[in-house]
Image (cartoon, rainbow, N blue to C red):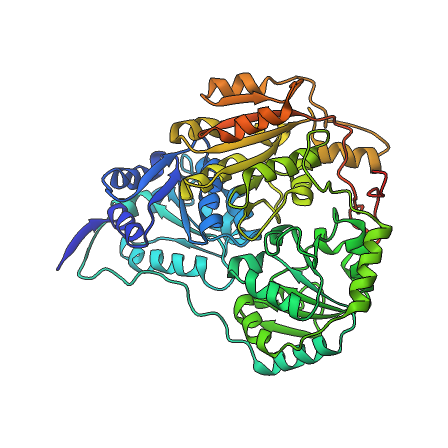
Length: 560
């Protein structure tokens, strides 16, 4: 059978074959042929965001919660530059997003034409791969390849820049290409497993450190089984908080800049780190040269460029974390390690946690714990970036059933709301909670219109301290209280704004029964805002000063 399609029609057809069913974006002059073709699709719905960055993060929400590549559209020039922040965020957090941008016609590239920028050149450092399409026929292999690249190995974003005349160019072809699928993971060396097993057997004070790679590989159950068999305490990066139940006896919680003091102290004393799906980020390790100085390292990662990049490993195992752990598990000897577990228990007694044991309303940590208790295990939890993000990481009662979407590597304010919308579109039967701050929410507040238009079940818990909270905290601690440009002088009425977008609003300020307010808000289906006033002097404790070793912790003592 012979097909005759324009480049735009071919693109939409190929996306349909990749099982894409939702695309977020904004039309413009350079991608109007794509939109014209998309309007005729019976399989794909389009979500019109109010900013291209919102489209990129909405796609991230879909991709993060499903693990499958999600698609966003932007036009040339400012449309492309607006979406690049979301693409860079996806690169650092290994999220499979396929971004398709329009470009000026081929003959006008390089002429400073209207709305022309070098999208291909700008996106090279922030994508896993990118394409500038020169001929419409090339789309037959580029689009399946883009999906394969995005999801294979360490996932990441792929950008496809399509000039307007390529979108209009007609292609005749006989066969649709094979769909792009995940390629097999690199196969680990059995000899490396043997060395790792010997190191585990001889270690007296081992710690298992898990990250986003474990979540991406779906290896949480195997990691828990390994930890229990080897009596190995577990710590996690920000991205790995859902690997173990929050209340499991071996779970020490998050390490690094805002870890509990006893967690970082245990790492100081360990003699072996089994690092699974982590990248030795500075927020986790502190000053990396002084991170766990006595410890040997077994590092498992699917990305060869991460092995030995920041910390030399005694044995570096290239492979899918889940496959490697499954290969290790039957060969790991049962161990008790009572002395080591007793030492950690003593640390916890000497340096009690700041985290409340049950929810309440008196502090941000208690409120977040209470929201988690009300939401249950199946909720999807999204955050923006700031104090509320760290409080959520510390206090939310995470379980392996919790969806956890947060901007880890890039730390992007404005991430939360559009990402929550994407997650809700992908999983409409799950409750989506978005913890945000006033500074972060203002970054992409226009996406409240998108949420209302789509009718998504997203509840934003807005922790409003009328400032840039973590900036304010660092200015107090490290810049002698010089609060320059971190305090907002205008008291924004967020409830009024949210109602203007068609949202339901609840306000915790002065509530006679704050728990009843929370229960009512959480029971609502549809876009909702819960406004929570927070004293700007509420700190995130403990805290490691930027650039310092993890042992150099401020705050977090039992009186905090």
